[in-house]
Amino acid sequence: SVEEVVYHGTWKIIECVSVTGVVEITGIEGTEFILDENGDVSWQVPDETEPLPFFNCETYEVCPAAGNEPAVLKFIGTYAGYVVEFKVDISDDLMLLTYEKCCMLQCQKVSPGPWKEDGPYSFMSALEHGYFSDIVLRADSGKEFKVHSIILQLSAPELD
Image: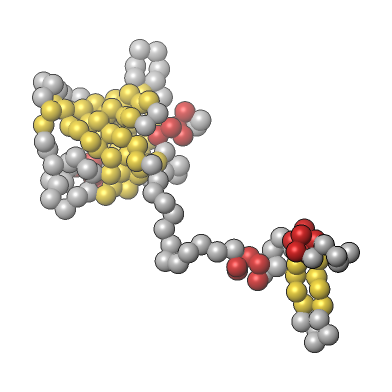
């Protein structure tokens, strides 16, 4: 749904607050999770973090707010019937997840990093395959060169 799109992306747990209001260093700070558009959740848990049950969940579901009831984010486990529900308060790049009678997790949206690839990005393969070309030049040898009329006009205005 349109409403669900705000949840999509990578989130980092930045703070864990117990229900008594005490900020606790639990070790789960820094844990990142990705909510994708297919309903899958994947976890990136720092090595020294104590594994919490919901870190094993592989899917999620958003139940929109209804009346006085807040929206609910459900993490769904791989075995039948295992669901962890958090009440959700979300705004732009912050999300507060409240786990009944336990704690609140303050999460921040992580902006996607620069696109990583082994080498620099290039349009060369698109050019070599002739995508975007609108003219074919044929050499005496029979070799064909797929070119772009606009680029040709700009680089050799005397050609018509």
